[in-house]
Amino acid sequence: MSEIIVGISDLKVSSNPDDVVITYALGSCICVAVYDPKVRVGGLLHFMLPDSTLDVNKAKENPSMFADTGIPLLFKSCYMFGAEKKRMVVKVAGGASILDDTNYFRIGQKNITAMRKIFWRNNVLIDNEDTGKNCNRTVRLELKSGRCLIKSSDGTVKEL
Image 1 (cartoon, helix red, strand yellow):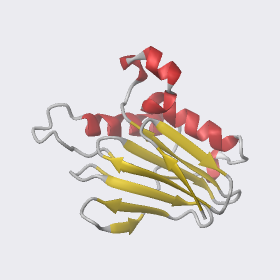
Image 2 (tube, helix red, strand yellow; image 1 turned 90 degrees about the vertical axis):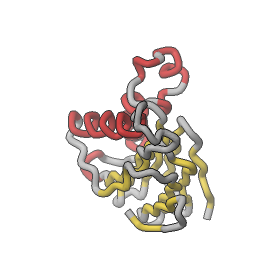
Image 3 (cartoon, helix red, strand yellow; image 1 turned 135 degrees about the horizontal axis):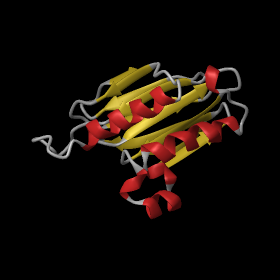
């Protein structure tokens, strides 16, 4: 089994059933996990911010940093391996309010809202999610089975 690590503002896609794609330390960031069970293609996106208009140059350099540029890139990257939108299973995690007890900046909430709008506009349904709250999360996507596991900072592990 090979682990593929997805950093912050990063995405990785694989078609190798022996791969496990993992991202760590999701706070206000969002992880979008996609998986096509027929061709066993999947990947993770770990985006930081909702809207690429915040910094157009950064979005050109690293589209994975933003929801509006990263989400389409994740899907297109899976399509290159034979995945089809209609078969994609979509799971999301993150969007917490970490270090923002007053909820002043609401970055996690803004990320969740931006992600939902993008999916809604593109007719994509979220199959399961673990968003909001006040905890960090780690996400593991097993390409052999499509299982998506979430480990929270309180030690709980659950399958999405």
